[in-house]
Image (cartoon, rainbow, N blue to C red; front, side, top):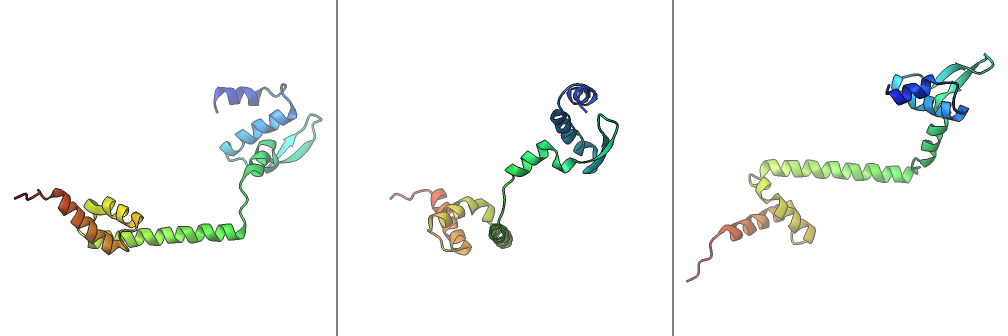
Length: 139
């Protein structure tokens, strides 16, 4: 615990109840204290404190994005498509020996629509590399 947190936590006679609860809401999770905690109030009475309902955590929950089921389905579908695409590219790379050399050219060809698929992009990228590295034969 840093010195500022310790000073704030140990100085229980100062600050409002809300400030003290906010301090608790920051400190309790870092010490793996359960969400429900018994505390003694100013009258010596024990009360059950639900730390998940403390002010700081409530404001964070209010600002958390709310997803609808269709949003979640779309996110899952997008992640599955990405995973499939990555897997397909990894398989392609293993079977094409010059993939690492031409992959940036392949990406440009695919993005510009000048190649229809990975094989087409690979073949065109190889030709582009060969043309750019072959000296001009002027006669």
